[in-house]
Amino acid sequence: MSDNWNRREFLSASALGLGLTAIGSAPPKAVGKNRPVVISSANGLRTVEKAMDLIRAGVDPLDAAIEGVAIVEADPNDRSVGYGGLPNEEGVVELDAAVMHGPTHGGGSVASLRNIMHPAAVARLVMKRTDHCLIVGEGALKFAKAHGFPEVDLLTDDSRKIWLHWKETNGKESDWLAPEEGELDPLVQRFSGVRLHGTIHCSALDTHGDLGCVTTTSGLSFKIPGRVGDSPILGAGLYLENDFGSAGSTGRGEANLLNLCSFLMVEDLRRGMAPRDAVIDACKRVASTTKAKRLLDAKGRPKFDLKFYCLAKDGRFAGGSLWAGAKFAVHDGDSARLVDCVSLYDEPLKT
Ligand code: GLY
Image 1: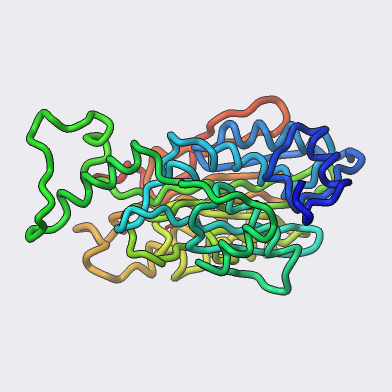
Image 2 (image 1 turned 135 degrees about the horizontal axis):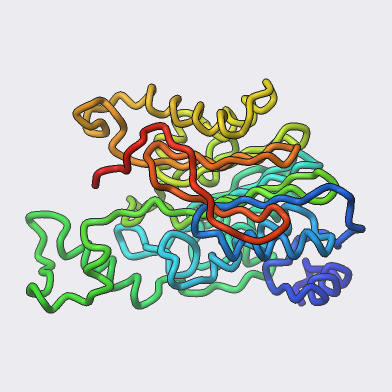
């Protein structure tokens, strides 16, 4: 047991079957009367299920959301989050994550964190155990280790192979040569020419009407080392106000950083907008502020996607995307399921 994980935390975490990710979590409390709701990105079906189970056991909504996304952080087959996430251009996995807690309006985040499987749990400790909101790079790694998180190699063999192929096919003057046609691993083939913005977001509303949210990612694949996206930036990758609602995003982080759409969506809720309208408002904001020609199609529409998730204090929720065809995960009491996002454009993104 880490010195920083006290006996009471350890006992309640053990009773709930939680592991290292529970470092910094609050003890469960009595269950309230409100209907809980958890939403997440499309890769978060197991996330909403886990978070809902924990909320029903009295776990704090932020802690429940962190445990939910921890499943995906540890999943080697999700190439956009945590362990198995695609690395930067030098083959090193760098993670970004942030959390916000409704009742305390606290927030914490880490960026460019290497070798730690659960950056969202570290972000919670930034919120609870420092006077800061954001810690990056080497400092974030030292901070995580000080709190008992073990260092692990986050680059799986499959992710290394996908990165190697990118390196071998990226740049005309390179001395790295790709294998002959037909010799390419089918897994690598699937990712050829693809760069992911991936990410997982989760917003949770508990039985007391309190909110918590988290966004965690390995960021843009093959990024310049040190590149930070929207995920760990409060107001961009996520935001909440306990009296109004919670919001988050996945997709092209740069477009969201330039618009702070999670803050925008919560402001929309504050002004009485429904979540469905708030996510479309965020899409419209991104579409109207994207000016660089290289990012626009012939009709002047963004050539990328960005997805938004919005959960109101009263339990209404929505997912939205620029382009049609996206889904998001929800558990609103009965079961976990994928639901269609509303979209700004009624056709899918042409890739
Ligand atoms: N939205 C994740 C990223 O751009 O890093």
